Length: 280
Image 1 (tube, rainbow, N blue to C red):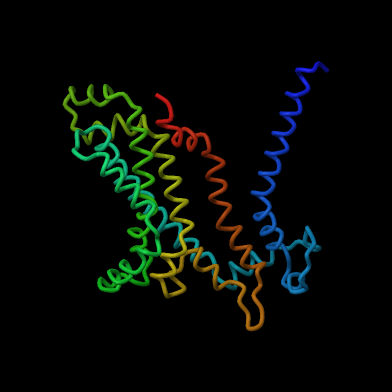
Image 2 (cartoon, rainbow, N blue to C red):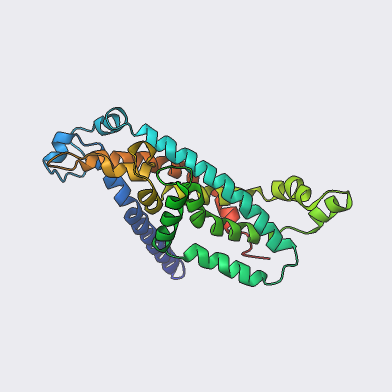
């Protein structure tokens, strides 16, 4: 082995070891949750700290769906998050296209305000929204959460799509406009099909942000039948003398796996959308 190859080999080994440590640190909490979810109530009650459960069982999962009716919160979350994602992407597409193509005074200020709204503390918005929803009679219903979730989803979707539209040549819609199409028709039939990686990325990130919400659901929902999945987890595994975290962790695994699978299946589109605007 030559003197020049050895430092490169050591550098490669060190980088691989660093990546392995980071990956292990990142996935260890989820693996521990998965391990706890596979424990029986008896084994969990003993406080065993084994790396693997002695007798793995899916009793916690079965109990969540049969005794706790965890399917209803999952359906509630799916419906609310899907509607929120569609509405957010629709409005973000219109706003991003206008900011990218039209000559609007103060475009920088508008984008700055959108960015500021995206970073504004959620807890600071709960109070005013609660008072407004109570006045309108919207409390204890899942659908008004769509408007609340747009606090998460609309800013990031607008920023992503604006950067993506900036990379598309204006000649695409100009040809459609010359042929007699309106701006909206050019956007719908010409620009959006080409910008699908960005639209898809905005939709996935919007869905994930809405899916993981806890603060808004906790503030606006009171009836268990209206709970979303993250909020319903709080009531799982409760007994008079003990909290069975194996059942709670089973629910955490259930609501995490769809997001993980969605990201794994669409990772190329997500990367393409996130890197839009990085180079010209």
